[in-house]
Each structure stands twice: as structure tokens, then as C-alpha cells.
Amino acid sequence: MTLYKVLHYPHVLLRKKATPVEKFTDQLRDFLKHFINTMYEFDGGGLAAPQIGVSKRIFVVDFKPAFESDKFEFKKESFRVFDSNNKEIEAKFPMVFINPTLVEMSEPIKVNWEGCLSFPNAESFNTDRFLNVEIHAQNEFGEKFSVKSSHLYASVCFQHEYDHLDGIMLVDRWNKNAFSEADVIADIKDFENDPAERKRMKKLKVTEASKIKFDFL
Image (cartoon, rainbow, N blue to C red; front, side, top):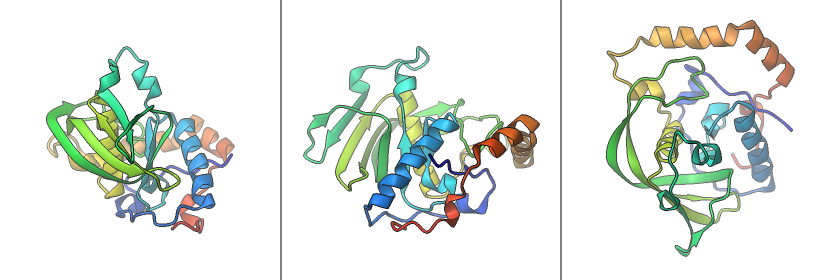
């Protein structure tokens, strides 16, 4: 199984606005398998394609651990999935979101635990998010579906991954007076230069997805 390199801030490709997927090919579906595996390998609850240098409007998530955690209370009505006919269907993880659109957000909240695989080792600051979210998207076959969420972790994750598709970073959401960008970058560099992490990355033999000419680009 291929693992893709996760880009760290302030890599220039993280700022590139992603474009819609128009070709739902076998290679796209194969890419998604490796992409999901990359999310799991780096212990992410979500991962957006721009984070691996693929500027397409795609992200993947797996909320099952959060739904089973005592930290984030789960109620069945807090996370509902609907097919293209607006019929409620079972939520199955991991979930793939292609060409997503946030169509409704309400009940502003502050979040201070939000993390990001592109910001390893960096502290989190208060982020403005919404608790109630409705998102429309397509799956790996181009089929439309939607999700309504009032689950704290899922709703925040949706907004976080959606930001990546527009080149918006966590530092853009934080109060500029609450942190030093130089310190954030230094924390990330400390993580990258840690001997244990360097050894791990060498062993994983990650692939730079930005250098692959996928047929769905």
C-alpha cells in the first residue's frame, strides 16, 4: 500500500485552491484507497487532498473513534447521512467527500483542541466554528449524498477539511495576537527534525503525490 507524504505548513501547495473533480475514474478510486491509508497511518480523523499536494476538492474522514469516545458524546440524531433521494442511510466509515459544499452552518462555538496533520507539534488556539453543519458531496463513484451533523467533533472536522480545499490554514483562523507564526513554524520544524520521526519517515518510504500524473486531475 502506498503512503503519501503529508505536507507541513508553510508549504506553498497548501495555499493553492483546489479544483472540482470531473473524472470519476478507476485511478481515482485506487488513489482514495492509498489516501485513506495515509490518513490512518498518521493518526488523522480527516485528511484533505491539498495536504498531500493534490489540489482537488476531496477529503476523507473517519469519525468512528470519536463516536465511541467518552470525550465526544454521540447521539444517533447528531449525525445523519442521506442519499441523493434524501433517504436516510447508514453512516459507514471511512467516508469520502468529493466536491463538497457546506450548505448550512449555525450555532457559533469556540474550539481550542483543533489539530491538523499539516501542523504537527503546534499548539492549538481558539478557533471560530459552527456546531450544526449540513454538507453535500459526491462519493468515489460520483453519486450525490448529504450529511447533517450536530456532533461536535464531526462538525468541526468538516469545516477544518473544507478550509483546506480553499487554501485556508489554521493560522488564518486563530487570533493573531494569541500566537507567533514563527513559533508555530519552529514547532513544526522541531517535529520534522526529531530523530525518531526522521527514522520513522525513512522507514515508511512515503510517495510525493504532487509528482504523480493522475488521470482525474
